[in-house]
Image (cartoon, rainbow, N blue to C red; front, top):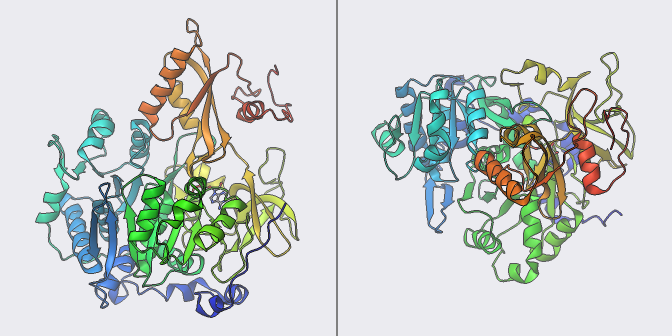
Length: 590
Ligand code: AMP
């Protein structure tokens, strides 16, 4: 069933950043979009941090609030653009004094605290590459990512350092400097962040930065293998800025809250960079999701534009309209969502309870910025991800037996016309396109065919060019908006002495979208029982943190392909009671 489209008042057309979608799309070009930004003085290139901080600080907006960070105790730290310029200059000086050079990776493993924002932007000023990690990751994902990206410096807290890094530091020879934020016992071999910042100078000249210089390293997961480090360049800021104008309707006087953690790409592209390039005020909340807390932040901070995720919206919806009505949400003018399928009920709930429909949009770590979106002045079709952003060409490709785009003699078949379904593909050329997977040319090359970037998602297109998400063409899991690679989880489980083999799937869940569920077979001498199940789940949590399995079943007879891989697809069909499908590659059916 398709839901009734939600139309927009005509005044919005005149007022919005994109009065007419079709017209803007036809006339759009990325070179003109680039001219919305200033570039480094003296024609020395394009640097994300200059566009986000210095051009406002030096352009008469030094006293405007750049950041409002709400901590767990509800205390608010406000930092103006002028202060942010000083602090990020100081951090760039710290890195330079430590000898962390251009292109070297600086990692953050921090909650959403002011220091995270200072370090992120200071790193970009210094010409180093920012690699933000999710602080709820366990030691194994943290170690793998530091190792793959050869982190030269890391900013974290004493507690996270003790729990996740200290024991492994000897195995990370590239990691020359660890800076610690906040109170806590001094740790040998680390540097106090506050002290280092206080001693550093407030003047820093951003070195010449080419739009092709590396800026960001974001980790993502595939069906197999270790995490992939997607590299983004400084030129990506053109896409961050432009898409925030069109898809989020951002303006300089907005108070903008993106609820994603900067450890995931949304939390960096739109939680830090894009809104600051518009000179808006960015709200961040250190606390975890709680319905009352989130409504309170929206109300007390007078948030005008809110970018969040389906899991959170579904949880708010569960609390009913009465809770929302207790808060003054009158400042809110635009709501958008990303990261997982947004059910039409939630879009309509937004309209009824917040007085605003939720605008779904679609993108991925690799695309660096929003690619498909619903727009402020255009009707919203509940359940649809919307239409391509200006400057981006989207296609649907015919799929082969493995579910991915069929490539024959280097050619793909693009499905044209209406009401077609295929693998979602994008024509490379927009500025925030990833430039490679670090040290993994083969996987990068395998993401392209016949001039298209293949997204791994399956989508349909209706007769008006709106795209509808159908599913993933591979086995990656989306749990509460977080992308989880089954291989990473399986590898950890298999390190437990009782586990012979593991298969991990996403099990549909009404709130989180999917839950991580593991099936394991045991080594001889180990019996499947509740005690072992609890132990394995705890083992997973200790090693993996937030991406650990929530459920675990024993299965002495895991299905395999002829090439010996556990068939996750079949485990999933069995879990859901669905037909088992084509089992021709199955080694041994039950
Ligand atoms: P990530 O790289 O972690 O940002 O995850 C990207 C993936 O999240 C996409 O390839 C989709 O599978 C999923 N995703 C992102 N946005 C949406 C959306 N609006 N609707 C459905 N799935 C989405």
